[in-house]
Image (cartoon, rainbow, N blue to C red; front, side):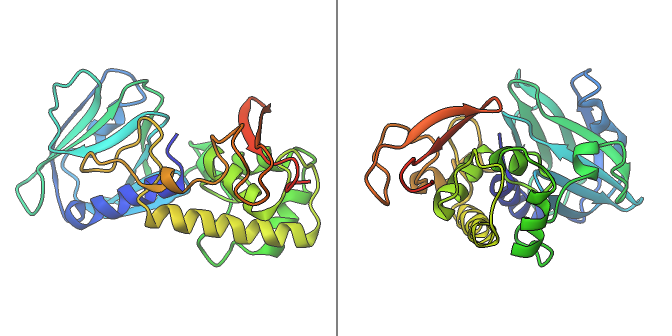
Length: 267
């Protein structure tokens, strides 16, 4: 599933040509998950922002098109609108850049929603989301306090989006490995939380710089893969030597999510 770095990469690539464009026409798959695409017909895109794993397209009538890519979603300019996995598309009045934007989603786990700007009460997972990890509100003290509110496993808490926004399975494993924190731990000391905070910032910053991680479906807006999969040190490397100590990395399932860690480094 695209996480913060992948959505941020898409946001940065869409914003320069999408902002200022007026939606001349739109259409979608009949599912209510995609029909909101049509609701912004006639509106002009004034901003392209991101919150956690959500893309937020603000319009001139004080609404926002909220896009969640799900597991296999992608946004592709000038992609054929009659391709079988297209779930929604928008055609823009003539201007700079492409005239079409297509939402392609093979497994249909993505979704669209149009809301009043800033009002996310109808999207609970967005309404209750934690601070942005690359912003000033995310601090070691804040993370430690947030994790103390629950006795659930540390990785499970990170995936809930409550302590911090945008961290999914890939970057949770990577951050825990860097911080030497066991993903299954239920409590963290202040020094551990401080290391985990720094690790989260590090892995997300690096992944954004690398254009995101492509393991299977994720593509940038020009169809290219991201590059960060070549820089992963823990996720998906079960059975391989730990890059830090040489012990074999282990894989297990924590709260229904595949998890990789080093039993020697992450005590």
